[in-house]
Length: 300
Image (cartoon, rainbow, N blue to C red; front, top):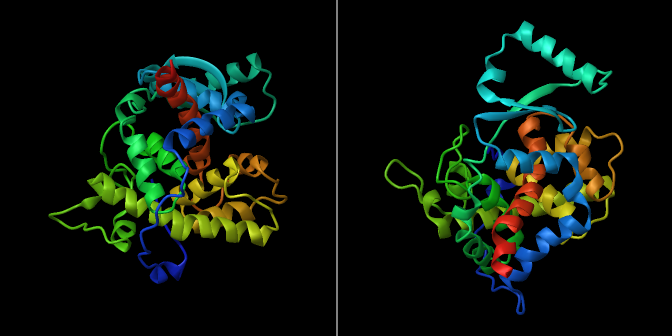
């Protein structure tokens, strides 16, 4: 994950006081309501969400050949075979797919490898309530903790190509800004509680304020509890405020609500490219998968 905060106001960040969670709030309520809302809004039927759920259940030996902008699935193939095709031969196969599926334009068609090995929700499940509690202790909606844990590092502690590390995939600079020790001997990003604190501070001090500012500039009304607003905040957490602003500015007529998020799925600007577009799609898919695999079973 690339966390690049463009704005110079980072230097103004201060460590805020400990905030108790609001009385009456429960982790279980936050956790269950998130999946329910996705179903109620019908987002579970979107082709992008359906696509990523399949990827989360597909072995890495297989891949889904799909139309990138819509995630329309054209075929399931052996990954090694697909990636081993020479460009000329692959071009002929793509032409065949276009004829079969009556695709008249020239969309980008790609093969996406299965990632069931990565989305180990059973392994991350014990950390979900802990993360929710840590965020709420810092006055931040626990939904964000759950979203980050489900898609950033559900399999194991690992370092991204960009250098992000730990259960909340923090960059070194971000971690240090919030008081974590990151040097040759110590890396507190692997400490769950310390990492959760830094991530919640990033959400509270940067991501939410900039989401509000961007929407205010566009004249778009919002409610902080709306799912689409939370997804916008998560795009900022992932891509950085500057890149998200570029993406929003590249949309000629921003739609209200969830329509804005769907516009971002097909918008490229600056470093807001494919992985950034996918981010909120993955969150929706992960919440639904987690509900099916973990939460629904615990209710029986």
